[in-house]
Image 1 (cartoon, rainbow, N blue to C red):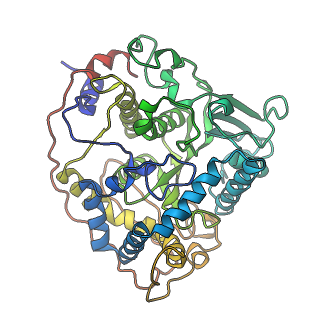
Image 2 (cartoon, rainbow, N blue to C red):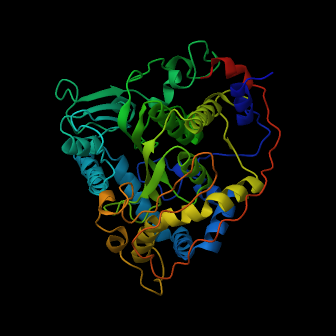
Image 3 (tube, rainbow, N blue to C red):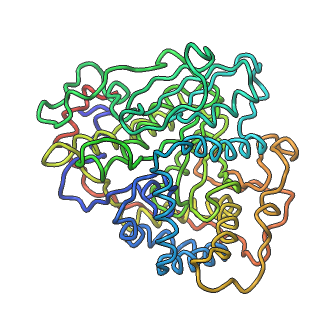
Length: 474
């Protein structure tokens, strides 16, 4: 009889007969930050059936998303928009003197905005004992902000070496600042985070010798984990990795970070497009073992779909969290060793019933928590020179929508002003939206009542290649 682990591995499916995508959409969005990989098929991803189905639900139930979807379509049709974002990508890739400093200051503004909103607050922890893990740390802007708030904190970091195309460091570390310990490695190649010592990398893999058995900070637990990694166009990597690198990077950040998050800690990660299927699934999963909010910076990237998921009171040893880690270990395995050539296979696409079930269950909560992020992007896109036309009715400004309060200014100590929070109840699939003392934006209909879950139609699981790895997979 197969063990529970083997059964879970079998469900992850490595066969090549399934219809797949080159996702995740959350990291290949056309509105991703200028430092992420330029993916030619991003528009195709938007038009995939599961993403169309998610957007159809949101447009049916929320006026803000309907308005945002119209503005995005206008942006897609604008050659001026293409020119604008092309210039941003070129500027981001530039190695001209002073570029790294500008990039650092750019992200420091985001970090300061998160800090002002209370994202880094840890009231139950002695400020002298705070430990932070920053994945894809360089140039170090968020670490600088954390150290401003907690001068005696320890920061552990992983970042891509400069010689491999990574960003330079703009903060002291190591001997120059013992509070900051940085390991310069390609995090996507840390095989020990996924498999144990009995697993042998296939000798036929083109980069078999490049995988690393190192496991930095494996004996430590962190109060705050920051994941800001994006696939860089400047990263010197083999071409066969390009399509699946977003999956590998996201998966490794999630696995590496969750395995080192202290119970009750905070986990923050950069995501793209709250209406993308993979993002929706990730948000819902985190809600089963943490209290989650969406944070949309106003200092930069206002016209993009980027946002930060802030998960507080994370319970990394819960069954839900362990299953989540296993799933993302499987995603990395699939994207790295799957397929006929053994160099990776794309994500499997969900069927219509799976999407419908998740959206009927989680859709109202997603709509409530995404309002501020969508309003900020609507305001920015409506003023963008490449978007033809103007919206008909005024909407509250981003500053009005975001507010200036912190979590502890509200009756609830765990609520960030301007954000709706997702909750899960133990041993229950019930979802609810936190009631706030702030009015909804004008013209936004309330989320539709949750419908009864529809049965999920599961397909047959293949056990060919992946099941053979079960004995070596944690």
